[in-house]
Length: 253
Image 1 (cartoon, rainbow, N blue to C red):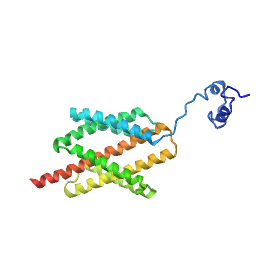
Image 2 (cartoon, helix red, strand yellow):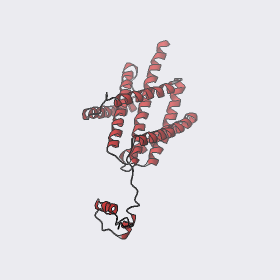
Image 3 (tube, rainbow, N blue to C red):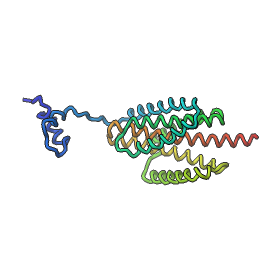
Image 4 (cartoon, rainbow, N blue to C red):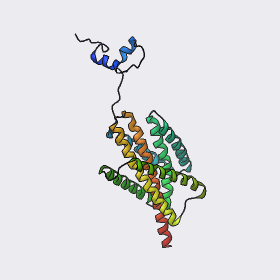
């Protein structure tokens, strides 16, 4: 006769044998809770899309507030808060959705204020940068899905080397200022290209995570990674367009 006790059922024995309880001695409390333990479903692309859309909605909403406030203090809070949360989210072993959402809010404070400053100087530049970022994202997505761009170990090494070089350059220019003129334009183009290629690496990471059937909670980490790259790309596109429009403006003077 088949027992109604979950521990004495075939499934109960199988789970114990599989090491659900590890090497500990089994007691009655363990036996009563084995079947009630939740199991996480594997992550899907829909999970990543939903989480990404959600945190970008937070970024846009907070960014709209910061745009209207146009307070440099909000930008500082967003930049420093975003940096700290980015470090925590990057190196934390456990995914914390609340911290990912908080990061999106901080980025909204920073981007809303920065975008307002650029818009005051170059009318319409924000919509141009958003469109440019969307086009770059869509183009890379199509190229990746069609197989024209593949992430290989060599590709990864080149991208990481380029990123380290760019970070060193960014730190130096914090004290010396960014180059202007033709050199500044070439560097801006290179930065946009680098950020765009890192979107490819994000796609590859998401695809590999889905294939590995990682827990559903990891979709928050994937969404966070995409946001970091897209925010970086938007800022580089914004800077590139400002250089172009500045040069055009000087040419007409």
